[in-house]
Image (cartoon, rainbow, N blue to C red):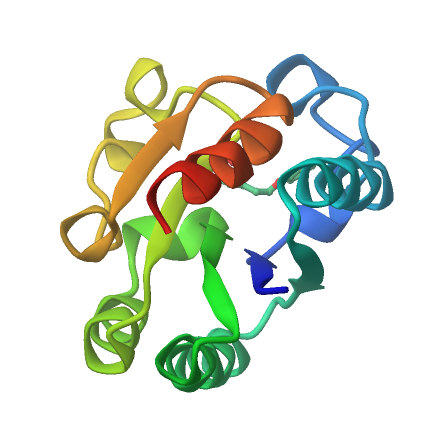
Length: 148
Ligand code: CA2
């Protein structure tokens, strides 16, 4: 059985506690349960992580690239949070690890401030999903099942 790694970047640990008008009332623990259900439906095991540290996310992407090459990982669903709009290091990590990444945003970043319209992740992502709320995580896992 292959694994799906769901990676969450900075501040996503605050999900459900602030800005519910933008991100909803669901907590990150609820999102993990939703992902576990979606993975079970598609025959994946789930590895769910969050970090506020760019370097830790880089290390996890390298690890994911090795697991994908070994055939144990279907891919990564990655909500890089604000690092989406700033991080050349995450761009390079995805490219360097040659790992299959689905870029995920809870909100429709293109309907928000101009600084959220550019993504360093999109050019190295296999697919991009934004604006479905937390249900986007389940949809991205279904998408990985369709292409992996
Ligand atoms: O829509 C998304 O999922 C984002 O990746 C969320 C990031 C934001 O910087 C991106 O532009 C779009 C923010 C994650 C922080 O989430 C919070 C949740 C509740 C309260 C405060 C922050």
